[in-house]
Length: 102
View 1 (tube, rainbow, N blue to C red):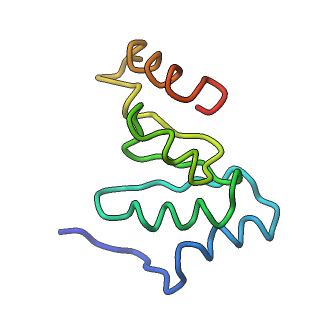
View 2 (cartoon, helix red, strand yellow):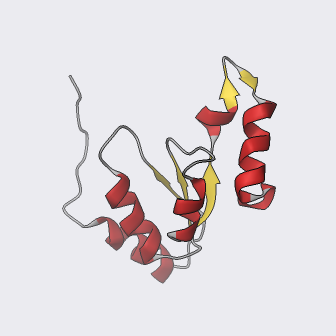
């Protein structure tokens, strides 16, 4: 069973706005599990260029998150396989979004 330690009563955009207001660029929006893409997009749009996003990012969806306002995409699970770097997957991501956005 899943145990939740904390569930905020604030909407996702609140956190993007808070990071922007407090001039804290580089915060991470991590989508763990299914059903949270809408919340992630809301937070990214609240602080365009100020938040990074991760969780299920791949070459097919990375641009969508950058277009929604992410400064960078976090691609750990797509690039690292069985404890090693998949240069094939890394190159696909570089081709999709450029190395400066990873």
